Image 1 (cartoon, helix red, strand yellow):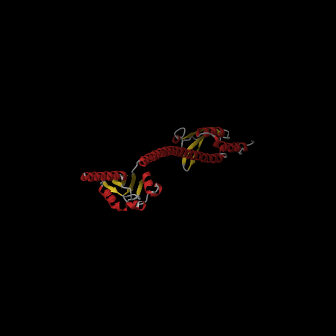
Image 2 (cartoon, one colour; image 1 turned 60 degrees about the horizontal axis):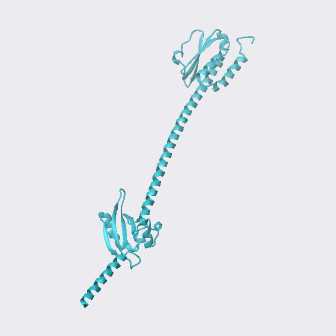
Image 3 (cartoon, one colour; image 1 turned 90 degrees about the horizontal axis):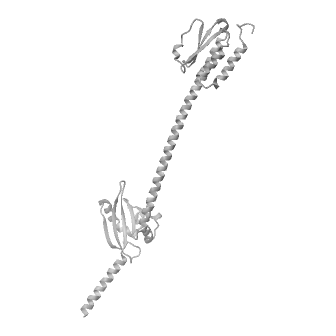
Length: 288
């Protein structure tokens, strides 16, 4: 280079090379240190120092310069990120590079801001991932608890249905509107209607012979009183008799009733036979 006051292509190339490297450096301090070392090669520069909010109190060096110094702030939207403090021994030689250094500091400001935005976004993403992970775990736990509760409820329901189906009596449960909510195996066998068909239907439509007892069932529900109706013929077989007992059913959310029908046909036949025997004995006694 024959004249120090002419731009050096090597120096300009070095500045351009630094612009491509800084984005790869890990942090603010390493970038400022790297750029400071590179800018020392500029003609007219005696020494370079820097300050930043990451390293020291930036306000301490923001506007304090000596006569042979120049400040090159790195600012983004009027917020200062760092400042290069360049000590100069030849202003005439240095001044032709000053615009390139100012342009470089603008590029550094954008680089720092992009890095800050990336770090901020990454922090938000990490927090979001953490929240999603925690929420997923809670949901999985809630689902597991709910599934276990549903299994327990299903098992309890099947257990109760097994007990009811094991009973020799007809067991029918109805809600406040006299729609069937429970229908055991004996009811299905004696009445001839499967549980799947009976559940949800009005009791008088599924069990027409029970129509005449609807008012009694309603009274039992309204007054919370048990009703016992002996020696009835609720079966389709008119030769069969049953004792009907109605129990009011009260839960936290609804009212209803449980109807139990016990087959007393054999009992009544035995009673009838005993009455006939007593009559025969009386007639035999009179004849004697």
